[in-house]
Image (cartoon, rainbow, N blue to C red):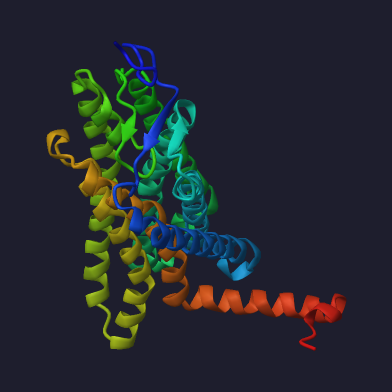
Length: 327
C-alpha cells in the first residue's frame, strides 16, 4: 500500500527532503558556521562593489557596469540558496516545499546562464581596452553595454523557462529525497522515476551553448590579449596590462570549472554525492570570493573604497559627530 508521504504518478509531492549532510551530523555545525560567515561576507562584499561602482564617478566605465551586475548576480545566488540551507541545518526538518523548490532551481539556473554571458562581456571589454585602446570609448559605449547586459538577463531567463517547463512535468513517484543542499535541475532530473532523455538532451544542449560559447569567446579574447601584451616593449606596461585581466581570469576559472563538471558530464555518470559539494562551492564560495578578488587586485576599486570611506567620515564628522566619537 502506498504510504502517505508518497505521491501518485503525475501528482507532484508537497515537499522535498534536502539531505545535505544529514548522514554526517558532526559536520552540520561547522558547515552552518562556514555558510553563515560566508553569506555575511558575500552580502557585504558584493553590496560594497555595487555601491562604489554606482557612487564613484571614476568607476562609471563599462568594466564596472558589468562588475556591478556580476555582484548583483552573486547577491541573488547566495540569497536564493543559503538562507534555506541555514534553516535546514539549524533544525531537524530538512524540507522545502515543491513550489519553493521550483522557484529555487528556476532562479538559480537563470542566474547561472546570465553570469556566463556577463563574464564573456567583461572579456570583450578587456579585449577592446588592451587591443583597441584608441577606439575603446567609441566601441564600448554605454548603450552597447546596456544591450549586452539586457541580452544576458533575457537569454538566461529564456533558458531557465525552458528547463522549468520540462522539469515540472517530471513525475517523482514518491521519491522525495534530494541528496543535495538545495534544489537544482540535474538533481531533479536524477530523482525522477520516468524516462528523462528529453530533459537530459535539452539540458545538455542549452547548457553547452550557454557555457561553451561564452567560454570560447573568453578564451579567444584572451588569446588576442596575450598576443597584444607581448608586443608591448616595456615590462611595466606588460605587467599593467596583465594586471587588468588577472582578476577576471580568476573569477572565470572559479565559475566555469565547477559549472563544466556539473552540467557537461553524461547524466549516467552524475554523482549526487560529489555534485552537492561542487554546487555548494559555486553557490556560496565563489560569490564570497569574487568581490575580494576584484578589491585586492584592482587599484581603481581600492581607491574608490578609500574615497567612499572618506566621504562617509566627512559626513559623519559634519552631521553626526557624536556617532564618530570613539569616547
